[in-house]
Image (cartoon, rainbow, N blue to C red; front, side):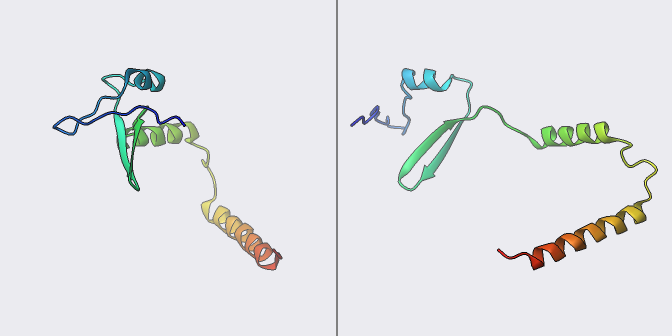
Length: 99
């Protein structure tokens, strides 16, 4: 049975992650770590990327730029009616389906 590494916290409760483990996970002094409590276990995971609300807003704006004009000249009330009909047909099919 492999019990892994055993470490002991210092007086401040700090522990050292063994070098072999840090290297295998690509953890260095600049790597943020996620610490979770699962039952009576502590799970420590390196965070490879963080998505901020600014990143999300930028991504949405990029999609909007790429799709700009997709509905140009579209008769929206007509499109809305057509979409509603498609949804009603799909709902009827689901109701009549036997699972």
